[in-house]
Amino acid sequence: MKKLWAPWRMEYIQGPREDECIFCVRDLPDEDEERLVLFRAEHCFVMMNRFPYSNGHLLVLPFRHLHNHNELTQEEVWEIHQCMLLCQESLENICFAQGFNVGWNIGVASGAGVADHIHLHIVPRWPGDTNFMPVLADVRVVPQHLEATYGQLAEFFRTSSLES
Image (cartoon, rainbow, N blue to C red; front, top):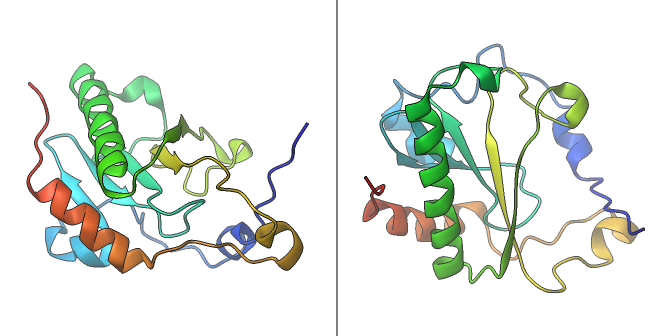
């Protein structure tokens, strides 16, 4: 069995916590670029992960502050799924992703850094995208700065819409 080591995540895990939810952005559209929000739909939105596992690591979240999936409406579930598909399309076209890890971390024990506001992870993958740097040197290699990736993905999302 192979092991995935992510020692850089300790900075996030042990770092200070905000009093307010970092994902409650419905009424803050003027802060989208600063918060790395790429796309807003009616019930949910897409943002970049500030502490990515790989370049282009995206999140899809409902606007409503929910910690339980059972509370999602059918409209939210549909829209989250459509946003996930849009994320995959953007990452294939912009970052040339060749695969994806998609999933939910439900609860603190699962690794959810923000367990009170559910969110879906879309992590782009490429053949051979893991290397020795994180394991031996405690360094992760993300080949592009967050702002540069944001700029490229934002252009894609500006011209995108969800299928009806």
